[in-house]
Image (cartoon, rainbow, N blue to C red; front, side, top):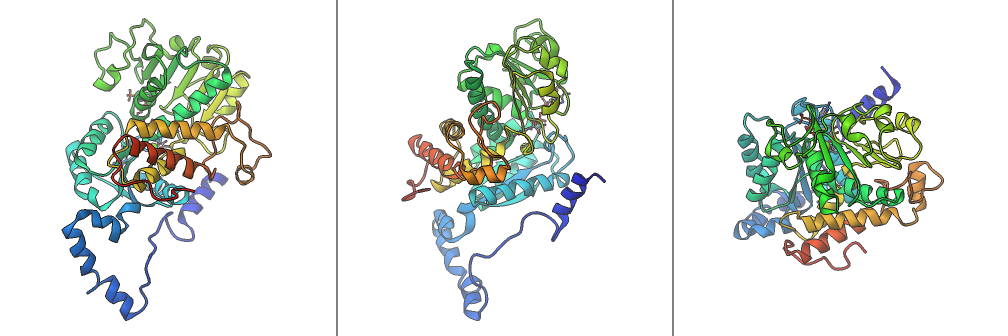
Length: 413
Ligand SMILES: NC(=O)C1=CN([C@@H]2O[C@H](COP(=O)(O)OP(=O)(O)OC[C@H]3O[C@@H](n4cnc5c(N)ncnc54)[C@H](OP(=O)(O)O)[C@@H]3O)[C@@H](O)[C@H]2O)C=CC1
Ligand SMILES: CC(=O)C(=O)O
Ligand SMILES: [Mg+2]
């Protein structure tokens, strides 16, 4: 067993199996405690909630609880390995919710036959939670699932691989292009992958100024173009009227590569074909489309990011989902809309341009970090992410009319 593999397995199995547990928030020691916590005392909040469902936020953990729900059909870049195998990733997301945003989170892995079954299962348990983070559900089913659940649930439903990834990608991309002296409106963009992350990343980049006709998206069959007759409705939105057919055709002179596909699909020779000062986000986890070592060996004028913690520039939805849910839940937003997503993009971008606190440098194991090619986006352990993103998102929810309560007094100050 390799050292790292052994460490990872040991981490997950010791001192107890798994990464999360439940803790109590109230005393439960005496007869009096139990009389309040359980019978007869528990009947009082039951009656209050039956009379007004909003009281669930007052008397239960609902308002601070996010469900991480999957069917295991697109586990990271490992593919469709089924619900149970996805559990370590989902517990990982729950760990991140708690560590970075103080949100309680529970993982739910759903076995199902049809997409409708999955939607019904989630819709039927939704009221238990303050929000639902859908995770690692493959395209195209993920689009229908998210849409149906947003319609059916009164709490925020957010497919992290779509929107969390898109928010972080957009923040990192705008900053990287700025460092490279390029405008997003002019950028020729290659997106390898045409699934959940790819479609959402490209749609958000377009909202941030990229031109749809400058985007070349590829799936396993190559470039998505207007003469293909095998495209689902989501891929069709990116069908480019072009004669280019292969990755090599489209990467020549491209300014940007976004990989949300699988491991080792971009070669150093492909990279050499790109325009001067390119931006390369190889975001597949755990193994990127090209390793930073190979990429930097191929050329020295690129900005490189991956989804991993062990290289500079981690473009990973962990920079978004804990904080966007914190802000959404704290003003009881009924949904997470585009205004809230753009507010999160702007908040993430701006933090990267400010001096980095000493504790972040220490946690990152580096002497300095300064906005530039090696630091386009904040580190996940940056304590400014929580107050800045959550507050910006909460404010955007209020301004766009989806918040159900006011901003809490002195929020995040
Ligand atoms: N860094 C981050 O924060 C995140 C990274 N990701 C990564 O993005 C990847 C995709 O995730 P997600 O969108 O959820 O998964 P999906 O299953 O929804 O989409 C996968 C897409 O990748 C394409 N693909 C797979 N292999 C190849 C290949 N050899 N050549 C071209 N295209 C290929 C598929 O093509 P086809 O349509 O033909 O099947 C599909 O369009 C994963 O590696 C994941 O780890 C995802 C979310 C967040
Ligand atoms: C980071 C993440 O959500 C993924 O790779 O699927
Ligand atoms: Mg994921």
